Length: 333
Image (cartoon, rainbow, N blue to C red):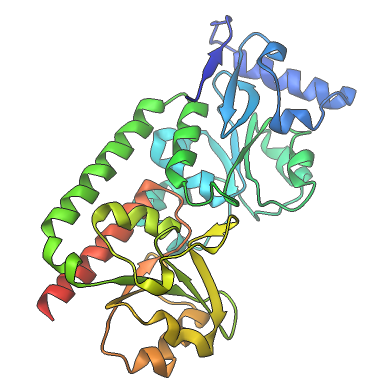
């Protein structure tokens, strides 16, 4: 069970300011070490701070961080939908169409946008008291960020890659709003159940595959053990045999990559869900995938579905909207 240990000081007037000055003093003294990023101990927490478990690593953070920098979308979107958009001072820059519509206005209102690999010193002017990063960052990045403020490293690579709901739960604990995260999860679970019941017949008669392209001449496919599978399987979706295995292994479970010539290997599904932005548009590589004769000449249902890397409940619900459109088309076919 995730735990949050809150330390005694409860004077709320300027505790965040005290914490920020404390971090600044530590940096100036050269006392901030790599352990800050991944294994800070609750025993070291100063008054007004608390220790949280960030997906298996303890981290000391300000009791109420109110100047948050999020350099990766996988943490930005949960922060927004957990009601803390007003605490964001900088976020990873993204095309507006790659932000779920439900979160777009709040994202665009964040005053500063930065590249996901931005140098740590570029964040200094924003004076963050907490930074969100990810375990796929380039070597040394998180350690450098840790010299500015405590760094919460969320798991986007490895065995926890597909568990985007756990990331949201973790961020809910960090923001001290676990009930909001629980409500989002319960609402999604109910919707998945409703879809499985409403479309039971068409789900039983059809299989699904998710296709995308991230490199010229290559095709990407996702299935049962991927993030997409984690979202759609509880809604009653059955994935095609070609994507029912482990695929990329522990780093990218349920994901498959092959040359475009092998596209036919992944067309054993009745419904083809195709990667897109959240306005239903396609980039150059996705359009090339759709134009591949193997897919273009197929009479299978093709439905834009959004990004394969799920970051939030807003995105999950958008993808379920698109899934319902595909299931409705299958009913009418």
